Length: 527
Image 1 (cartoon, rainbow, N blue to C red):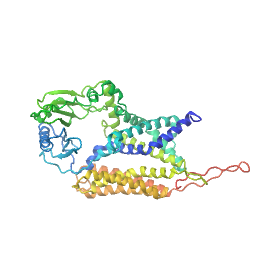
Image 2: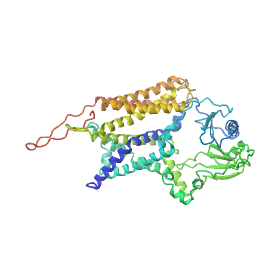
Image 3: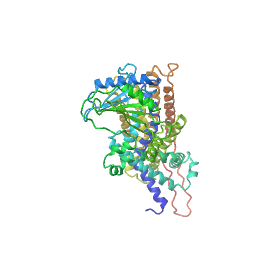
């Protein structure tokens, strides 16, 4: 324990923030982008456009075409997943799993003809969404890393509140013309306090949404290891059935779709067929969540042979399950309209700024004074700061740029986009090791600004259907480009300020008596 409680909390806040700060920045950036996950996916699949939703017989016929394709191309699969057409993605999205060790299958179909649709292979916004909580690692390890970082983030938030005796005064204080350490401290305080309720909510709900993953012992004990029974009772899934290992003639899926749509008022989102062709085949209709904060997904399970309704889940949740879906809904903000979604996005940006200024402030506070030598790890921390705070936005811009520049028919195109993302990030993380600190920041910020401009240029030049080239086109492309231009402007302004910054002159105190010590030099950012 330090000299006082507040000093102990300050030590805890400082070191807990640094240890996971770089990972937290990546989590915040990709999580903030995920609020527009659907729009990013639409932008990265420009061939699709918008369409009216299918209803009634049209939807049933489209589903029959999907089942016919799967029966021909994936007869041995254990499960078929059919993503039904939506206005923002008007194709049948088919996915199937075969056996362990065999790669899964994935294809898009034209719902009107059943032919394979010409859609560029891309993960779209789903890559950023999954990176947010898995870091593109194996799901088990990725979620554990993110969960530990989220828990430490809660510690940093609470300890940060405790050390701020003047939290409301700090909110209205920003001295941008002072020394860098003071300016970054003020920026850290303002961005942290302004969106503090959001930071607490998003961090806590992020941990809670995967609570059973991090702490499975209660479920394991109460359900004697049968976790699927818990998920079924919580209405997350319908009760699974073991295969009978006897072939049977499946019932037509079209009538099941029409019955499901008549039973639930929400749009039908996905159809899952488990054990197709088996006597215990199950057809599960999954609907979009009803309007509201809680992220409930009503589900209806049909017998795949007789067509009888086996069970209905998610229409009337118990209190505990409702609380959980509310936490999930708050975290993902699917309930949010345009204005609320923008508010969540801006609060997410402030979270990025809070983490970024925090890790930069740590290195500024430890710059050597005149006559002192920097401790060995400072140079590495400075390089990591640049590699993460500048490198990650650069990697995201390269990811978008690869989507426009790679050939549409390239084999494994989605993987090449992801490789471009990580390749750009690795380069951005290594370059600061060979540059002075100030030059690395300045050059890195200019590169991100130019990459954002390149995304806009590539979008306009490669898309004949762009809003600036054809009237009446989807306005999404213009809005996306406007956002990239705004980011380019912000990064360019930051680069210009770093390049033009001049450290304040060192001032010495007047000696009170002969031999008195002089004040410490001002903090420098070009060390």
